[in-house]
Length: 127
Image (cartoon, rainbow, N blue to C red; front, side):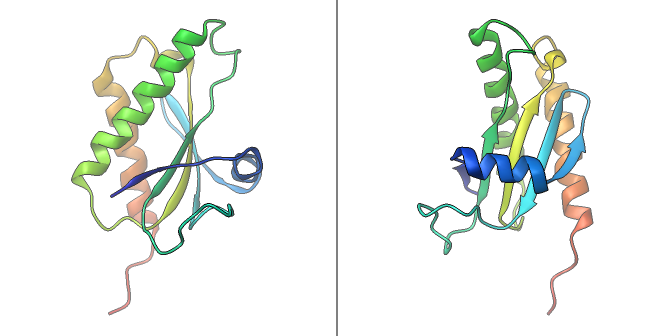
């Protein structure tokens, strides 16, 4: 599964307003099925559009906030290597402050829990 960038303020705002919410131990994931409404999106390609959201309320240090973002995005990238057949989805990852000190395995378990709940929640494909 290809990891693509979710870009644009309006796209992220729409995802915050209308997206479904999944709350994990170390992050909150907002998601919507389908491609984002952006003129630069190739609608013929399948993939997961990912954006991150980390406010200064998490930590005043930009270095620490960026580390939280990178750890969440990397755990998603690793988890998607093993999965196939996920539908095109927009994700907005919002790490919690616990994600900075948590072991990477716990962040990976959060991501795998989200992906398993997402794969169980969709309807089976018609044959």
